[in-house]
Image (cartoon, rainbow over the protein chains, first blue to last red):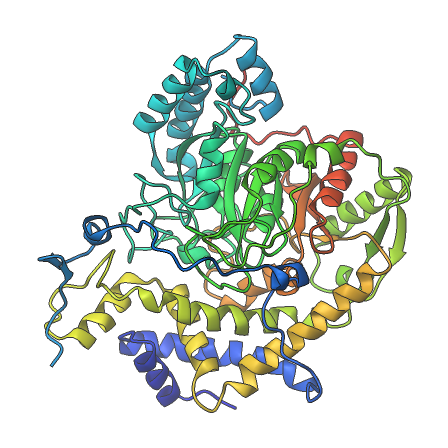
Length: 98
Length: 489
């Protein structure tokens, strides 16, 4: 199905990316072309196929991934906040929400 | 200068006292600094840290340190792999000079084996690209011809190895990002089996496809590094509990009787004639070396790019949601309200290709489209995996081209995203199927640009790939060096 400018605007909103009018004009036709290309998959009858759950190998699926529920050392507050754009009093500070 | 040497040569020079880690590392740093103006391969060169570590290695009295397999070996690391104390920009403005507070597991293992990290290499933003033109910090240039791209997304690591700055480097491979730049720069490049090594500390792009990969100037060096970084990691639940074999042991075995699958359908339309001739030449070489060549069919391989660009963008849109200007990296100014801050930060912080992929991924996952795109792609992915499984029932590995063309000009495909995506036609299948793949250099085009072929094997068959690659390079050594190459002592 064709991608409209309204589709692109909606997707940008969902993805939390502000888009200028110029960007919308560039991305619209590019995305339409790519979506049109990937729609070649519609020629394949997949009604009886299980979706692949990822690149996991049989050995990977058998690997036990859980560990005992024990307290382990973590980064700690100072290190975790060290790269924050606006840390304050041991928290991540953000602009007002409401 | 010692850095163009192999790991094995470095080890013997170091253990006999003919050189020191400090000297090796200094020559590597000097080459990195000297070439960076022309190549832009490094985003950060850690002169101070690397020299300090080399001194520690030289003065260490501990006997077990002398046995370390990578003792004093300079390595370069793609800038999407976390090294404590160094930046991890991922080639993006949104991370900028972010300094991760921990080491990736693969880094811990390299350091534990005695390696010295000399710097972080340039790459396409968040590993999204096939040319390195998507880096926010400028394109990497190909050491064979600086008007051309090095491939991508791990172009800086490929260029650093090709130019003799380091013997080995790490990259990441989500759809060919190690193998394709390896082909375009004339070096070896491996993407291991999904789950072979840890992604803890590798910045996530598409989690069902990403693997850390290795560049080197010989199959032996790549095998040595994989042996160090491979194995189960409790920090990454996708690493598999599969023993790590002695890869060096496998190298010396001859290849008589190995069955090499030839998917002829992949040698048709879109493949450069010189690349086709060179790769078919390698097929003949394997026949002469005693391998049996078997025709195989991969009927669904032609859908791989479509499947890949649905799955990879969907996973990326989810993984990159974390860049919101709150916990690390860049935050847009003058956004007095939270949602506005998110939107402006992502608008200003991400480059066009990353935005395009986040948008595509958001689109294919959005309400009403999930079944039509994402589920459909995962179903066709199952078909591709079945194709591979069937073909591997009849042969030990496949041989294909790695890239449809040699290195293209900077700017040549930059305005056409779909044309750029088609560069990955031979490489994405390995990521979709989860199998290992390796680029092996096999000659130069008439314009003196490297050409490589790709070996693909079943799960956990890295030993077989090394054995095949080593047999080829022993019989047909790739001795050409690019015009930009660190000279040897």
